[in-house]
Amino acid sequence: MESKSKKLRSGYTTGACAAAAAKAATLMLLRNADCTPLSPPLARGDSRGVVSVEIPFPDGSRVKFKVQSSEFRVEGVTYIASASVIKDAGDDPDITNGAEIRAEARVIGDGRLAIGDCNSKPIIGKQPDIVIVGGKGVGVVTKPGLAIPVGEAAINPVPRRMIINAVREAVLDYAAIVSVNQQSTINNQQFVVTISVPAGEELAKKTLNHRLGIIGGISILGTTGIVKPLSEAAWTATITSSFDVAKALGREEVVLSTGRTSEKAHQKKYGLPEDCYAMMGDYVEYALADAAKHGFSRVHLCAQWAKLVKTAMGTPQTHVRHGALEAERARDFLIDLCIELPHDRAFNTTREIYDFINNPLALRERAGVRAGPVPAERDQSLSIVCKAAKRFAEGITSGIPVAVHLVSYEGEIVAESE
Image (cartoon, rainbow, N blue to C red):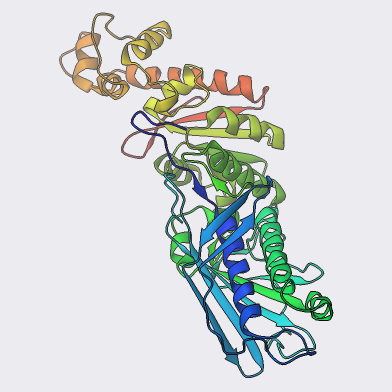
C-alpha cells in the first residue's frame, strides 16, 4: 500500500512474534539442558543466548526474527528458558507496535526437566507434545462467540499453530545434533510454552477487548503473520468478532458507530447492553452487510455529520482516502434532498454546511424573521439526511430495519431517521 509520499512498510503480528519467541525459548532450553534421562546434561550451565530465529509462516514462507533477550535458569529440578521478541508493526498505527512478546519453555517428562507446576490446567489446550499457556498480559476469553472458548487464553488458532510449528522446528534442530535414541526420547517429551506480554494489561485498555469479553490483557492475533499498514482486514475482523459475541449472547439488535463519540451518544440516550455496540470505523458497507449476514433483527447506525452525509450519498467506505467528499458535491446532493442551501455559495467543507444549517441567525434570515424562536427547518434538514442514509443502509441489509442517528460535534444525538 502506498501513501502520497512513500510506500508503507508492512510488519508482523503478535502471533508471529509469539511463535518466534517460543522457538527461541525452546532452543535456549535444549541447548543448555538435556531433556532426556539417557545421558548427562548437554552443555549444562551454558547460558549462550539465542540471537535470532527463523520461523515458518502460514503461506509457506520463512521469516527471520531478531531475539531481544534469552535466558536459561534452574528452579529446583526444573529447567526453564525464556526469550522475547519486540513487535514491529511496520507503518501500521498498531497499539502493540514496539511491545515485548515473551515466551517461556519448560518440559514435562520422565527426565531431568520436570515442570514444577504441571498440575495447573493449561488455558489453551494441548497438542500431542506441546501445551500453550497464556501468561501475564495475555487476555482470557469470558464471553462466547469467539474462535477461542470461554475460559481460555486469547491466543487465536493461527498463532497457536504457528507457535506449535516453531517449537517443533526447535526440537528437530536440536535432535539433529544428538543420537537417534535421544531424538526419540526428546520427541516423547511434553513441552509447555507460556506466552506473555509484560505491558499487555495496559495496552488492552486502548483496545476494544473488554467489549469482546477478553479480560486481563491483549489478544495474540494474526491470520497470515503479516501486518499490512492501515489494513482493512484488521477492522473487518474486529467488526465480525463483535457481531459473533453479540449473537452468541442472544442480542437481537446491534449499534454501529463510526467513532467513540457517536457510540457514547447512543449509549447515553438508549443504554443498550454493551455487547450490542460495534465500532465500524469507516467500513459502513461491510458492517451493514455483515450485520445482515448474522441475522440481527434491527441495526442502529450512528455517525457525525460528514460521515453521515457520505453514507447518505451511498459511499461504501467513508475514509477520506477512498474519496474526499467535496463540499460542492455535498451541497448539491443536499439541495437535491430539498434542503434549503444557497446554490451560489462556496462551502469549504461539509462541516461548514452543517454550521450553516445550524446557525440560528441564518435560519431566521432565511425565514424572514428578525426575532423569535428558531424555525423547525434545521431539525427537518438533519432528519432528511438521516432518512437518506437509512435508505442506503437498508439497501445493503436487504430490508432489515436500520435506525440512523446523527451525532453533533458536541456528542449529542441531534437528529434521527425515525
